[in-house]
Image (tube, rainbow, N blue to C red):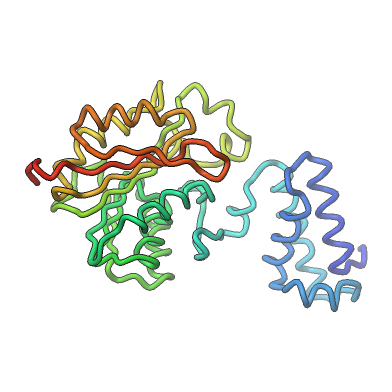
Length: 289
């Protein structure tokens, strides 16, 4: 049996991922080492060349197993069961999409628009990263997260408990089917990938993330149509509706909101300069539900 150290094991992991064309091989190799051994960067630097003891040697087999799964395209976030979003820790598994930095644009936009004691609805909540970040960082008096996937709701509930947010509750529903009441703000990152484009996604996404949370029908706009048509009945006059969108969907989604009677429609870009968020306001003269 080879005598490992942190340094040699990390190098092995990096080389293995590099050989399988994994992007950011050294970063992923480190995250998995950190996950298995619970080691900090400082401890690593101090003890990097120390030969492993018997317990550490056994753990090295677990590390190698995770590296091999990562080399096959399995996302590192699912392997560790965790990721960070808006500076907060989130549990994730294959029942939910992995939260991405692009989605932080939606949260930041919502935070800037949020009024005190906000009643918030998050449609297609998934891991709950949008809803729970807004509840943790904003002024949410009541938050409801909706998803059709029971597996996703279990993940969101675990995250709700971990973040300590009693003002949030989760509802199993096909869009608005089981939703009651009216809200000051509705946010959503719905499935928006055109069906035929899913096969062209990165293998980590295509092969492992839930297609239920990706597939937006033939043109990718199915859920935007439904949400644009129905959201007005669940918003107070002057309430806000915010969507994450695909980079080429700003015009189409804006048109859907305009046709549904929303006002003050805007498209916001992400850090890469791509359209990422569409937001609008329910006209004050429209009646509530």
